[in-house]
Image (cartoon, rainbow, N blue to C red; front, side):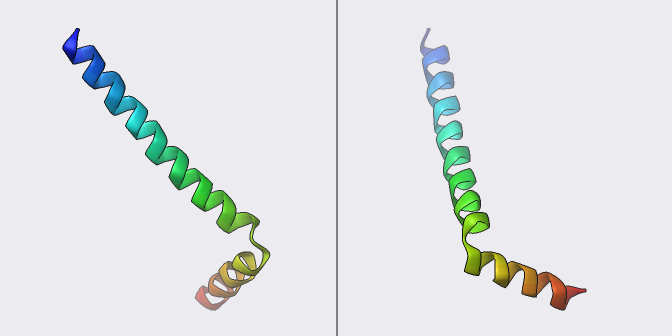
Length: 46
């Protein structure tokens, strides 16, 4: 019983971290100036 509670706690923590990463990435991709910066970096890389 104790093991499952620890496991579910770990899974929920992992989901929260994943959600935070996704939110940060989503905001970066929806930010127009951020997109211009990324496109410029990719163009310079090519």
